[in-house]
Length: 331
Length: 227
Image (cartoon, rainbow over all chains, first blue to last red; front, side, top):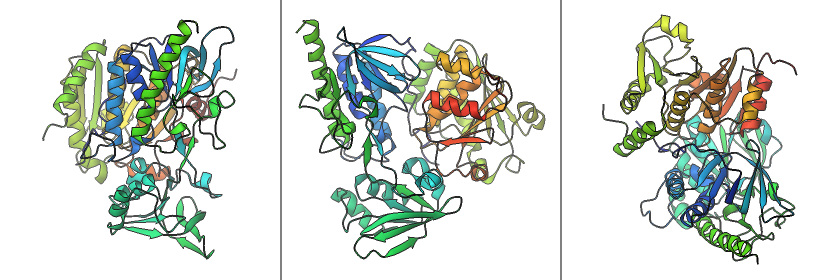
């Protein structure tokens, strides 16, 4: 029997309190960046709310194993790691609201931001930390929508069990793709990694593990062009970027890990973003709008890891606190 | 059988129940012998574990009781049980309509704890707007939520269905552990979770925020009062 209680316990640990109409800091998103900011804010005794639309943990919560977060020499599951962060944030008083933020706007007359939610109306905050992370890039084939949930998946831990003794493809060559490929070998009989280059981008330690796994095969220099099948995925047609030759891989499932798109649509026009939508910040993690900060994967940053998101969270909270104090002093 | 709940978890749940439970909650579990007609070779393996975990759970509070019906077609009929194992969370705001098919393990164990708290208190955390909209549903509506225990996005989808069921007894909120019911999952082409199916006609994949989830439920509900 597998371990039954992988996820630990409920997110509703604290007394269910009425949601206030106003907070010192509202943190949007409860991944490692947002949770770290919440820990720091709680310890600073700021009135803090974390608004999360899905489940606390963010993208890393679906990682089977995190090997590069300091302090866990034997690795730790993304779920366990973020549950601990969540517990720590709650311990120091952060309130968690399950909702989706629709927009953030600035009060014209007072030093406040208005955070508009889908189900809890508009909540006021002296400062806002954007920690909304990113979503996986969709597989760029015409059939994506048709087969999403019918063999195309963006969550290996969620859906691997549907592919016991089947052949699956993993599209991508970064850390997520290779970690997914390794995880999938526990279920699938064969895993084909489809990558557009002739070498992987993933960290060497993961590469070594993948290359030594007999269930993992590689389809180099290849991009996906079509997904084939009737009601569900039956094959993936790939094209060799050098020879233009097309090949059909007979697979039952396709796991996609080809990068992320930032969840920044709700602040577009309010803060500066890059062409791809990543939120631009200064060294204090402050955006182009004073009082609004950004951390983690949504931020324009060279490295997107749990440890960098956590670092961002600490800096952003520190900066937000300085900002609130300066406003209270009237400067 | 070895104990399933770790000591730390037990302590935590005991404390949680002590703080949060008000009125009694009854967990009603349906089991069948291995050759029972509603059990399959996959779900059969999990039956002893499902029973064990629930026994351990109810031992942590005198406000939560467990009733087990084994090979009891009459009771199965009364509750409308279609597969085994089936678990009903019964209390002041439910009416045989908050249901788990298969073991509530992994991430779904959290869903069960939260359901117990909501049923004990007789209230949910759905928004006022959602509660109002739900009253438009006046005929039987089934929300099926297919999950795997390793899916962190799934409890949210299960909980939304269960809370909707608590708010409106025309609604049945049904979790289905996909590993235990491969045929059932196959019928709805489940290859990714969470997958939500409403009255066999409306469906979506992935966890949606409450208001968008609600739109699908309303669309799938058979008989809505027109405004």
